[in-house]
Image (cartoon, rainbow, N blue to C red):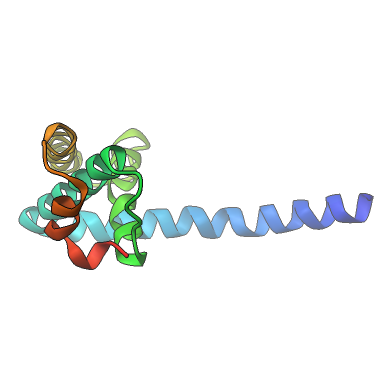
Length: 122
């Protein structure tokens, strides 16, 4: 039993820095994007999250799951001071929140929502 605990501890310690490094590099990638592309990614992510809340039967593919990570990276970049350009991230967060609110309030059915971004759903 102690051997399992020691092995689990070693695995957690060895993967923790790599996960932190991956998040930091993804935040740096987003910070390097032009404002228009970052706002487009935030809009798509807001639409996806809003639709997933409204239509839980829809399933995302790998690209859709990657888009869901955008708001997490935006919030982490601001909250943990990981970005060199906080105003840019704050504008993108506002874009994400606006798109989420609009998607959650739309009266379209799930098939119409799926037709908006067909390559992001299964």
